[in-house]
Image 1: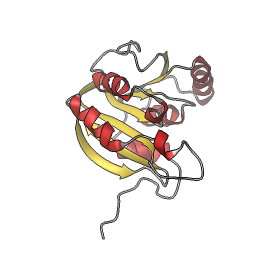
Image 2: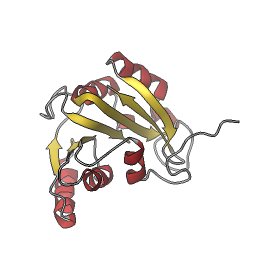
Image 3: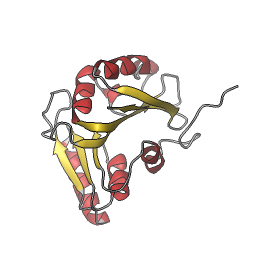
Image 4: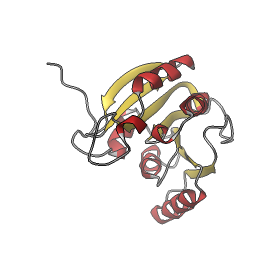
Length: 184
């Protein structure tokens, strides 16, 4: 029986391991779309180093303010917060085709308009750029959203493919999450 490839199986998402699996390197430009509390943002900022840049985008100003405070406390000057609605194309004002790694982690299950978010995410990818999507597995768990509120990765794969982006990897991102990598 084939063993599924995992990132930190048996745990919640481990940001550093997830980003390393996605191919993050020093000097990259990363966008964390729907960044929430910034756990992916902060890990990415440490991994890309001072030569890189991380754009933390969210619709909630309060989480962006907290990320700015955390970045200051941690001495991370390469984090740039962006207040935006990801369902509105180019509302983020991040230049198109300028990002090496776009992350959508626990973001899509919260939206009714996944197509618009994926369109925005893929438009930011530089040639050769990678899109990382990690979200809740579509199964019953003791916590998290209800199974019917979780993403169907078959639908996500089709939406991303419609933007001309190819799936390059599919893996578990811990016990409760699945993930995909797509490349422009």
